[in-house]
Length: 201
Image 1 (cartoon, rainbow, N blue to C red):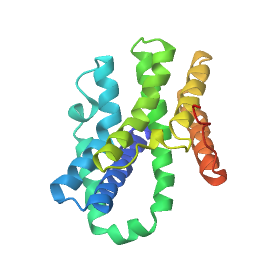
Image 2: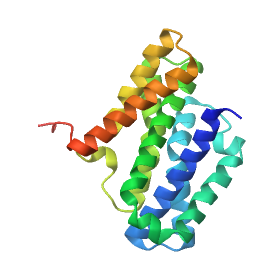
Image 3: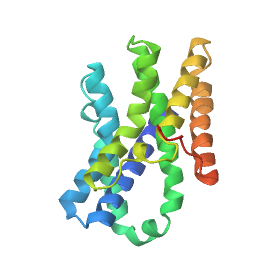
Image 4: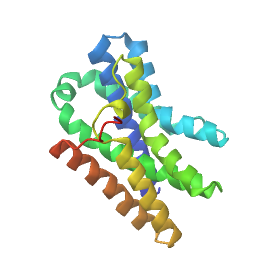
């Protein structure tokens, strides 16, 4: 089993936890509501990317392990709620690792489907952030990409670096590591130093 596949499954678990935790914390939804938000958070970005690219069947439709990963994440949230709520800050690190992985996976998939590199970079970013955007919308929060903090920009930077290294035939695994590390580094530094994108006007 490829290490990238394992990480993608783990990232799905983390995003499901993130969505379920946000739904329960912000609005006290019932089991169905929490499960729905967790599900959308985990598969929203990748599904949107694949629909825009005309890539069917969708990843989670084609591989039931992603459904199991989402269910696992929701159950972890349910039975470990107090601990998870206490360590929200630490969970954001896993969320950052998840967006890094999904960015490079989305970028790679798009470029290998034959689309222009600019589209690949955008779709890589979409893969990583749109699930969170939908989560925030459903839980009446300001979507993360509309806040001052650097989030989508880090993903876009990582996607661009991935494409540059891809054009030089850098080994896939090494490219994943370098590009993903850039996203994680930018995101963590932005949080630590409170970096933000300048206002439009």
